[in-house]
Amino acid sequence: MLELRDVTVRLPTTDGDVPVLAETTLRIDEQRVALVGANGSGKSTLARLLNGLVSPTTGQVLVDGLDVAREGPAVRRKVGFCFTDPAAQLVMPTVAEDVALSLRRHHPDKAERRTAALAVLGRYGLAELADRSVHALSGGQRQLLALAGVLATDPDVVVADEPTTLLDLRNTREVADLLFGLRQQLVLVTHDLDLAQRCDRALLVDGGRVVADGAPAEVVATYRSLA
Ligand SMILES: Nc1ncnc2c1ncn2[C@@H]1O[C@H](COP(=O)(O)OP(=O)(O)OP(=O)(O)O)[C@@H](O)[C@H]1O
Image (cartoon, rainbow, N blue to C red):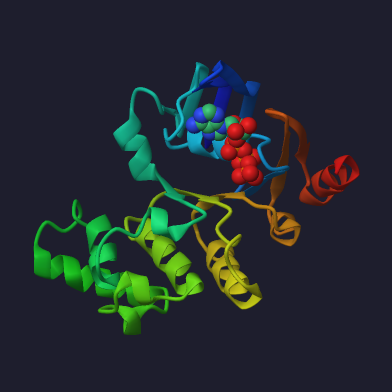
């Protein structure tokens, strides 16, 4: 369960601190939740609060009752975060080494770690790419690999920030099918309103506030009426 209690976020700029998220109180216990809204509305900020990538200026963020500010490492083990641009999280030379890096705490032994990494790659249809350079992948393969790296440690929650924005239709479908097939709770930041409508609940963020919250079809209709 994800909870924001009276959370505000102000971020520093050259003109001083600016408000990015107005006071927000939320509980999210649905399996799949979409965050939609215009560019710069505050969706990523809201998503990033959930694993401590952004800290609340006031208020508290809780994941299964754990305070993100005080129990960051435990929360980050529970909440996997997937960035829009997989380049932000693919840091090792080869595909298998990249997944193995995610598994370093679970498998201190190098050989065991590679075996576990290969099993993860197999699960997500990437086994044949194991020894390929991460720079020699298509955009879709790269996004799937980034997700595999996040899923390797079996988090309870997956937060995906526009995971299909850089992808073509076929790869969008592949990544979306993976995300919607997960047993994990999914928080999906997206401009793809079809994907938003596959969720159980949607939040519309506008000007740093959650201005609509509920059934995705209704929230998307509100969003269209504001655009
Ligand atoms: N590190 C930062 N420092 C200062 N301001 C920031 C920072 N990160 C984001 N902002 C500002 O906060 C506001 C909300 O940004 P955020 O990235 O959360 O929006 P978003 O809804 O995810 O946008 P997009 O759809 O374009 O990704 C924007 O005005 C942005 O410029």
